[in-house]
Length: 162
Image 1 (tube, rainbow, N blue to C red):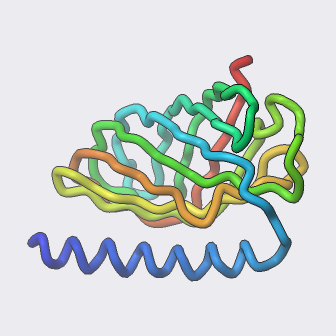
Image 2: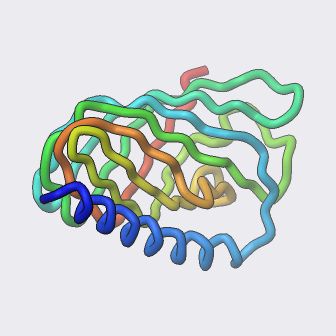
């Protein structure tokens, strides 16, 4: 696949995810409460899905200390190739600020897509967490390496590392 085709495919996948993320975020008013940055372990796509471990740091907006989370992200859908790990960053939205420590722990579900030929990009729009009140929106920014094409529904499970 040439680099122009890869760029076009990445743009189409990202625009498709942006549309679904915008529709989801329009359902309930939310305020940005911080950012979640995750380091992704290397993984192999299993054609119809993948499972990737991650470690994350949530940095709240305001004078609050960062929180550490560990977990995994699993994707069901097309996932072909190998990724050498990477980094993912989300803006975190919630109905209110001032929630307790560890509140981001839980399960998030949503649409995801990524493409890599050497260097790659990805996008994920997920909702869930404590009482399904958090949105990891509008899209994550993912940087990874490898040769991979993935698109599907993802489930992110986060556990507070205290």
